[in-house]
Image: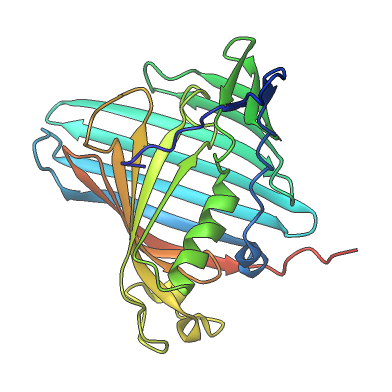
Length: 281
């Protein structure tokens, strides 16, 4: 968030008594809109939209989201990204493969990730994040064994997506929330600010043909801009990056752009396969 949420520990001191700690905050509930999220596999082709202040003349790559599971058994996401950036004869290529699982109650997330070509990011991340009454405890195995914590109001990605959709349905134009996704070195806690535009009229064609299937054009959707601010850059007003997209009420995103401040990447939806959610017991 641009305006950071602060966790304040208060103490009550009754007259003549011993100071007592304030009761811990209850864990944040999972928004009910998580039940609308649909398992799917989406493939995006990535290209350079604007070079901006960078020297890049070519950007190409592929982004694959493969979401399975459901609101009763939890969500599994297999994420793959391969990206090549070139400036003249110089270039860099990086590959990221991540598997995550989020429990249906939003209390636990597991992350296993491997990446190459990204510095100073870790080559491997392996962690479990568990929600406690007064914090989110993150136990890391890789890149090194250590333990860190995040504020109790921190959401995991599926919680966050459901909360943004709930805010859009309520007619809100801005939504702020701390987010932990286990990316990069596995230690980064983001403050996120989502700007939500006016609902796009149902029935209006998508900008990308693969989304014109299974009646998706009849669903509600909103233009959004999600800005991510890292705690590793305290006091800065510029986000690490901003994702623009059309967000459907079932969690599918189309017309995606990724603004890294110095340059902007377009991520065009080229394949979309919908799946049925896993049935509840």
